[in-house]
Structure formats: structure tokens, C-alpha cells
Length: 229
Ligand SMILES: *Cc1c(COP(=O)(O)O)cnc(C)c1O
Image (tube, rainbow, N blue to C red):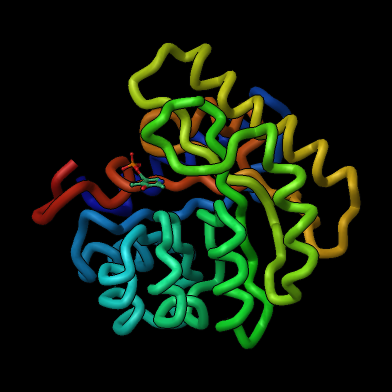
């Protein structure tokens, strides 16, 4: 499927879900996750009107960023090792995987300007998932005030894969409730208005539950060349 067709379909779905739930499609940023595909395919997404790209590994990010550069807004969505911060921090626009104090400390040391971060929360309780437990997220974010270069713009989660819809929905809802609790604190360093949640298989549910940033890989750019689904 051509990327343009996928983009059209996803935008149409967003529009329909927004109409149903009384939301404005302009509040939702589509991040095209290009981790499985080539630079050419990422460029196709840009030609199709996508403005935001996401990568989950340093190597993949560097490869695409070096060619596409400031034609896109860059999101790093994978777990980040502290020793890789130095090479990454100044080239990304958003980090979706802040999940520990040692990483915040390293980022703060390397950054020359504030970085917009999502704090990753494990709302499914699955041991395999990264992220803070919902119970510890609030105190973690409060403590981030000491790092002047870290701005908490929102929360990120991954729903359980292949689960019942109610489990997926519950996981997104938990993130929204936590976001509401944190944004009400009106902390200067943590406006925390955004919700990064929803992937190819569950973004409709995520939008119903308040997602502002959806991260879509396979349904948008496919998983491999040529033109794989
Ligand atoms: C790969 C990935 C996605 C996109 O997954 P798809 O199911 O292909 O849409 C979203 N978020 C994260 C963190 C990922 O690693």
C-alpha cells in the first residue's frame, strides 16, 4: 500500500473517532514510526504530509536524521541508555521514554536547551514493559524540577499487545487519569498536557481515551520494503 493511501485512511479514521467523541483532530499528532523501513519510505511519509517521525534505536535515528534533518520533527520512542544520550540529546525534539532519574541527570548534563519529554509509565503491569509504575510517576515527576533542561510535556504508555479491548482501554484510561492529576499541580517544569499512546492496532481506542500523540508504524509506512504492510 502506498504511504499516501495509508495516511489518508488513518486521517479519515481519526476524523471519524473525533466526531464520535467530540474531539478536534488538530489536537492529535501522528508520529510515523519508521524503525522497520528505509529512508526512502520515511521520505514518502513526509511527501504524504507527515511532519513527525519516530525512531526507537540510536542507529536508526542517526541514519534517518542525517538525511532528512529538519524536514521533520523528531521523536525518540525507544528506551534510551544513558551512555547514548550524548549522541542523541541535541538532535531530537521529543523524548517519549524518560523512565529513571539517572537518565534525567545525564540528559540534563548534556542538553544545551530544554528538551520536551514524555515520562513513560507502565500502565499494563506487564513485566516486559518499560516505564514507571503509576504509583511512583507523580513523585518522580515532582523530583525532575531539579533538572532545568527537562520539560515534562506529557506521559507515554504502551498498552498490552493482543489483549481484550477493555484491558487496552483501561491501560490508556489510567494514563489519562494520571496525566490529569499531574497537570493539575501546575508545576512549571511539568505542564504535562500530552498523552503519547496508541499504535497501529489500538490508536482508535487511544484517541477515544484522549491521546494527543499516536505512534504508528506498520499501518502507516509498513514494516519493510517494498511496500510491505
Ligand atoms: C514500534 C513502536 C510503535 C509502532 O508500532 P506499530 O504497531 O508498528 O504501529 C509505537 N511505539 C513504540 C514505542 C514502538 O516501539
